[in-house]
Length: 248
Length: 203
Image (cartoon, rainbow over the protein chains, first blue to last red):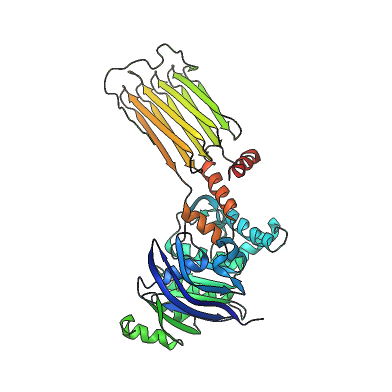
């Protein structure tokens, strides 16, 4: 098995004719956690959007190979089936669709793509209960419409709960720490750490070092003006905290 | 979308002049009408409803799923003629392909129909590039102490919701079907498999 899970080469992308990513090179091995830090407008969220195939973004150059596949040629749902997961910075509300039916549809779509039978109701409920406990969500939440009327912290916990249900190989956490108090941050971080295995990887996109006190990255990148301008170990996050992004 | 609104300016004119009501609801009676228009048919629904007796009620719900070369027309005039009558109208639908949908709904609150409560909503999703929906709600009020509202929207599926669902592995067609079924559910709670299949057939 190839140890490299994700290889981004010279990736250029933008939206509405405006170039935001200006040549990104990034390689992530299985089991690694990478942090991508950068100021507002650096292209952090664009990177997450392009990797997960959000419509509206245009790739103008470069390539992304994920687990041997040409990632950019795949539909968003195919990327999910292949083990990619994005924790949204702003989770979307879906009125009229309960968390439970939403995730049942998602879990069974993934199973179908893998040639498996749908999960039985009993099995699904047991899995749901177990994974909700991981992020300390009350079981009643499963009956509520997806993210409708949730607080900021509840939305982020719901993202990590969904991550747990889908057990992705590569998780991208887009500013999962934004708007969270310390307690919620810790719950989210504990969830992410519990799901981490030697076979799974994560990209933590963040503005601040705080989350990285709880989820220890192997590699830290600084993204600025659409390019990675520095790469280092966890100590790079401390440099950023002390000296800001202007240094780079 | 065309929306017009007249709030009792001018002189009251009997809306049923020359065309008797199709439904007359007497004192204390309740009229319930439900329309489900599935793909495969063009249909015209013409209703002239007269809430003629004190405390009469009307509840009208309509759902349409309209595909290529199909036409749907709702032409509704509902009059509150007696005091204390209540009416609720909810219409929702999806226009796919080059479907052609028109909704005209008029509520008239006649002089003396005090204590009226009248609500009308028409919400529409355009699925096809060349589908057309025109909705024209009208309200004429000639009485006092009246609670009335009407709302009309014509829109497309929410792209953010679709991407969110797809990013979780829900195939595009299924994501659209889920969104449409949740949009329709207030009209017909617990949609039947006929409606589910009809929604999928439009995608």
